[in-house]
Length: 156
Image (cartoon, rainbow, N blue to C red; front, top):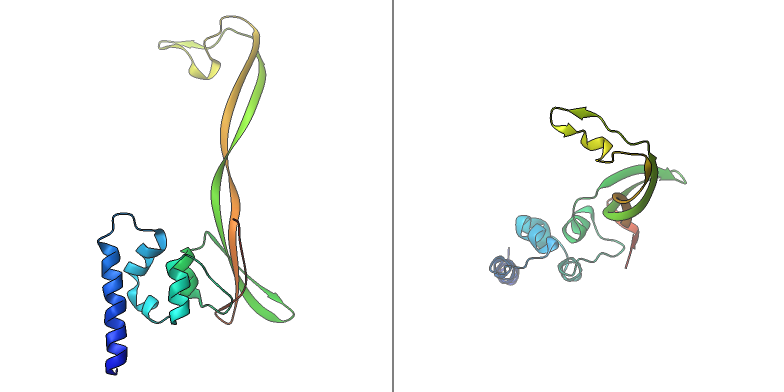
């Protein structure tokens, strides 16, 4: 390792150690801090993108991992005889559902009172309610061929 490379590596490590003093790390800054060797192996332009949480075509698996993190799903496939791998990233999105039902009343009584699954109605009637369910939504995907990004998409 020559002096110029040593000084550059020292500067990068100083920048990384500066991140450790910050209380509001981004997810990619935490990944960089935990994987400094992966970060130092990137080109200058790739390091800049990774620090911003961005990727571009031509980046490696390691660079995408540092920028976007571990994928939620990985798929392998082939197109035109060429193998590829796609990483997918999801988020949970709340969905609201309005419920409308009819109860015949009564309820199951035990030594604790009315069973909670039957409610506390004493007579028949309509009930209304809202439930929140969570569904997975695809937010980002990236496709690799020969360990390099060939295609990517991200939701804004």
